Length: 423
Ligand SMILES: Nc1ncnc2c1ncn2[C@@H]1O[C@H](COP(=O)(O)OP(=O)(O)O)[C@@H](O)[C@H]1O
Ligand SMILES: [Mg+2]
Image 1 (cartoon, helix red, strand yellow):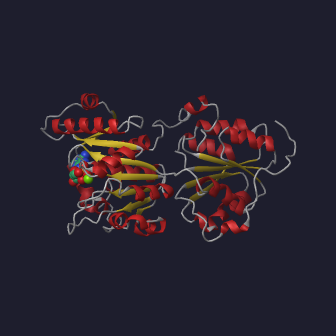
Image 2 (tube, protein in one colour):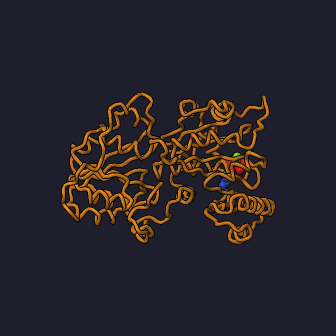
Image 3 (tube, helix red, strand yellow):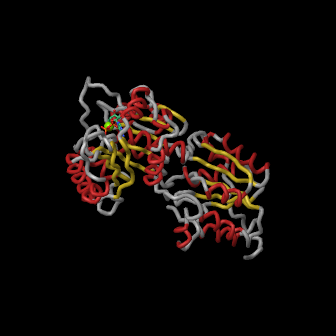
């Protein structure tokens, strides 16, 4: 490690003109900052005053890198972690290695340091740190570091798309999609958008007690749909949960072309980290196209023969449509209906050749109360065991390790860099 003064500072000053009115907004990401000095915490918080940061959820904490390591040993990591360090350049990479151990693969890290050292800068960038900002810095420099990552021309879309589809109508895919979104929003504190694609009969509006509209207007606007329009059409159901609800009317039919949802989904991916698609139990051009193009598919089935046949057909079709993508995953719902014979979950999953990521028991009182109240299961019964299952499914579909704690990011250590490089 060298203490040579670099010829030019690592970060480039942003021209004031960049903060022009046309600048792109940073998407709905969650940022947690761990600072060593209160002035640094104030500096990071002041970045929130920038218009481009208006959708960001940011919290500041004490403790620098070690504080972050302690926190994330037992908590999921946000989209972006900002850490201030007062360590010497040769101690910084080692300390960040401990942070990498507890970081989820999709999380990015910006380091705020007190040493202006170009070799350190290069080493950190090589190891997967997204940016190193030298303190003292201005709030505009912090905003620039964040916008460069998330809002620059060509920045990778942040939204992960997860679709839930039932093997047979009524198997519970909508209920599970909504409750898993709730688990992601409350447990992982990730912003989640639920897109209710069952335009005629969708229940997302009912289940979250929100007005029916949104998605139909967005899709029917066709080429004219943009971020501003989507923001207007989304309803905020709870902290970190947004909905594009179905109109649920029958005054017209809802026939769409194969790719008619594509543009809406692509725009959503630019602004929300997790997009949950509540896909109706149907097989037509656009449902097939949606299943072929999203990141993850979860098939929800009841443990009977008709569900088994349909789940197997769905899984095979999806694997053929997207042979190199994530294989569909399986959730068995409504187990243990009194007196109903059923197929064992393990046997079901091995026949369907899908990994089983959740099993949920039949509970008419609990699910019925939630549905009729327009509430989530966690709101009706916060102590219910099924909430853990929803969280575990949420962890799986957002690509996080199911186990917390020290082993969380162990696989990252085997990579050549500390933090996984991102596009
Ligand atoms: N585990 C469960 N126990 C009891 N009822 C359930 C369970 N899961 C879902 N339900 C109920 O089953 C019905 C159908 O669920 P829904 O999510 O609309 O199915 P789908 O979207 O697959 O057609 C709803 O009334 C819902 O409350
Ligand atoms: Mg449904």
